[in-house]
Length: 464
Image (cartoon, rainbow, N blue to C red; front, top):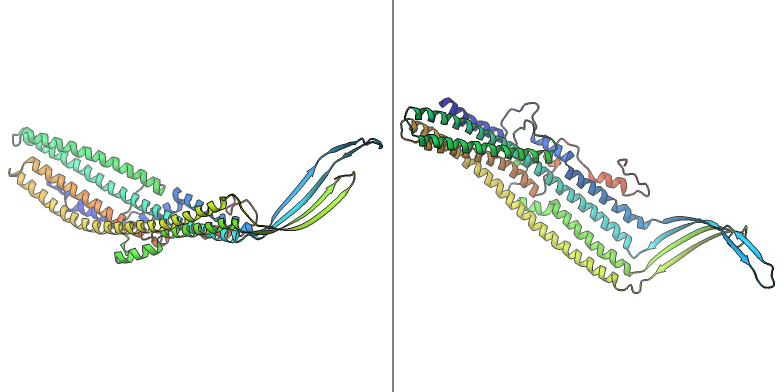
C-alpha cells in the first residue's frame, strides 16, 4: 500500500507536474506546441481575419478621397417623338412629326475646393494608419487569448489527473478502513469519514472534468482545432523588459491602442478642416459636347460644345455648416481625451500584468514548499496512524491538503506562463514577429499599395 501512495503522492508525481508545466519533458513527435497553436491562431482566428478585412475596407477610403482630384465624366443620350399641328390664321394647316434625339458627354474637373480634397486624403491616410494599429492590438488580444486557452487546458488536465488520483487513493483508504472496522480497530465513524471524503473527491473530479471541457471549448474557439497531446508551455520572460519602469516607457510610446487613438485625433482634427471647407469658395471647369437631331425641324443636325468655369461662393446656408464645424471640433476634443484614457488603461494593464508575473513567481516558490511540507506531513501522519497516534480523519485531512497544494502549484505555474504573455501584450509587443512564429506574416501595406492608385475596376486584388 505504501508503494501505491508513493506513486500518486510522492516525488514522482510532483516532478511530472512541475516538468509538464515548466517545459522539461521530451516531447512526442506529434505534440502540439504553444508556438504551433499560436501560429494557427494567427493565421486562422476569425476575429483576427475579420479585423484584417476591416483594414482592407478602410484602405479604400484613400482612393475615394483621391477621386476629388480626378475628373467626373458622364455620358447621356435621349430619344423621343413629337407631333406639332399648326393652325394659324392666314396660313394653311401643317403637321410636323419629329424624332428629337441626341447624345452628349460632360467632363467636370475640380480646380480649387478650399483644401477639402487635400484634407480628406490626409484624413483617410490617418484612418488607414489607425486601422493598422487597431489590427496590431487585435492580434495581441488573439495571441494572448490563445496562449491563455493553451495553458488553461494544460492546467485543467493536470488538476483533473490529480483529482482522479485522489479518488483512487481515497477508494483504497476506504477499503482499508472498512477492513480495520471489521476487526474492531476503528469505529463506524472512521468509515463514515472515509466515505464522505471519497464522495467529496468524486465531486471535485467531476467539477475538474467540467472545467477541462470548458477550457477545451475555449481552445477550439481561439485556436481553431481540438487540443491533442499538448506540449508544456514556457514563460517568455526573456522577451520582457528588465524593469517595470522600462516596460511603462515602452508601452506608453509604442502600444498600438495608444497609436490608434492618436491617429483618431489626427482624423478628427482633419474632419474639422474638411467641414470648414464648405464655407469657402470652390472653382471648377465643365466641358460639354452634344450632338442633337430633329430638335426643331425634320432633318436638322446640330453639334454643340462648351467649356465653362464656375466659381461658387457660399454666402449663408442656414447655419448648418457652422453647426457641423462646431460638432467636429467637439469630436476632436473627445478623441484627445480618449488618448489620455487609453494611456491610463495601458499603464494600469502594464502594472497589473507585471505584478501578476511577480506574484506567480512567488506563488510557485511558496507552492513548492507547501507541496514538500504537505508530502512530509502526510507520510508522518500515516505512520502515526498505524500506531494509533492519529485518526483516520487526520490522514484524510493530510491527503486533502497535499492535493490542494499540488493544485495550487499547477495553477501558479500556469499563471506564470500566462502572465509573461500578458506583460508582453500590455507593453504592445506581443506579435507573430516577436514570438518568431512559423506563420506567414500578414502585411497590411500590401493591399493598400494595390488599391490606393486605382482609377477604375470593381474587382478586389484577391479576385473577388
